[in-house]
Amino acid sequence: MNTSSNNEKKERAAVPDEQVTKPILETLAVVGFADRNQLQQSSQLSRDKLRRTLDQMQADGWIHMLRQPIRRSTGRGRSPGVFRLEKEGAKLLGARTSNLREERPIAHVLGMLDVWLAIQKAGLESATDAVIPFSGGQLRPDHRVTLPDGRQALIEVEQDATPSLLRRITSSLRNKQKFFTHEAAQGISSTVRMLVALPDGSNYQRTLGIWQQAIDVLIAELEAPLSFQVAALPLDLFLDTPNWSEPPDPTRWSLLNTVHEGNTESSLTAYLPQISRRNPNHDRLILAALLKSIHDNQKQTDKPDRTTLPSPYFFASMQTIYAASHDDSLSPLERAAYPRASLFLLRHYLHMHRPLRDQISRRVQAGSTTMRWNTTVIFHRMQSIVDLFLGYHNWRSDGPLLASVETAAWNTNEPRNFRAVVNIRHRDILMYPGDTLVPDAKMAREAEQALSWVLTALFRYAPDVGFKAPPFW
Image (cartoon, rainbow, N blue to C red):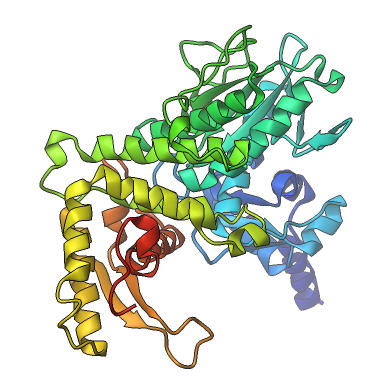
């Protein structure tokens, strides 16, 4: 009898208290994920009690702790463990689970949850990830919050941006422009608050630069001022001291554009004449923005204190060139087309570096009429040009950056041509000055893919970038 009573007590003790678990489940249900710090903030539990509760909830199949680390670039130290709401836990609230699996989108929704917690703490009403329909489209902001003065405002959480995202960012801004010219936007602040999940520093400023370029593209496309403006602030600075004023405090927020009559100037004006008018207008504007990115990267590379060391801005330029024709946001038909946009940027890049262009031109054609070409000789010639290209930019091909020449294996379904392949063996070389977070494996693969394409294009598309065709191609 005593044994049975003791067992019943143990079973009751093992069942989590609903008053304890409900805040945890409700927090997880907002975006489907939450990290340990966010759950402690919402539950107000001690660290030990939270750990025991989470362990029991996981044992019951309500939640699951991710094995993969979710790195967050907010500058707030080591990222805590992340939990996902499982079906059994979602049933208790009548909620849905999330199907996100990759690190970047999960990091994004965790940033959304940070803002949701700040909204709850301020006692404000909000809708998270809710669709706002309007004639001809719909808008789905991360948050629509009712400010203390009764007006509503849109809050978006963004991560680092590169030129390869320029088309997607421009598309997002274009949709917001449609919304703010519609009657559905009445009562909503025309200032979109953008919280960037980066610490204030060089990467943050580069990200704002990409957004400003996208705004320039849209202004030039519309030939009219935008009906809204974007105010940016690092996410961690906002969380330290949330600002709910309308309009946002201009001493804290960076205004990326201003709304007033006649604001149609674009920084792309100087680059548009270099883009062929055969391109559709939108493509011309995107190419002009990408061309501007390459020039901006070069200005950073040319700074006096970086003349003897390789610069990570080199990889940014290679990725910009590659993205012009290979961006995932392009349609399958566009990605299947001849890569004219990437080749245009590569040709322009080589024009910016005439000594490099001239050296490659001479090396490609050296001994073209007398050389007896075989695979070994071709590999040697291509490797010497790969080394020449990298060496010009202060990189070597056999260190943390490995660049070599090969042909596709016979058991793979790929073109049987010669090609350059790149392997970044230490991801630290991708870090910009001031960065504290080492780029992840996906970012390294993207840099490898871009540089591999550029190096191969020097041979495969030689006539398109200003060289004679190699005698062995």
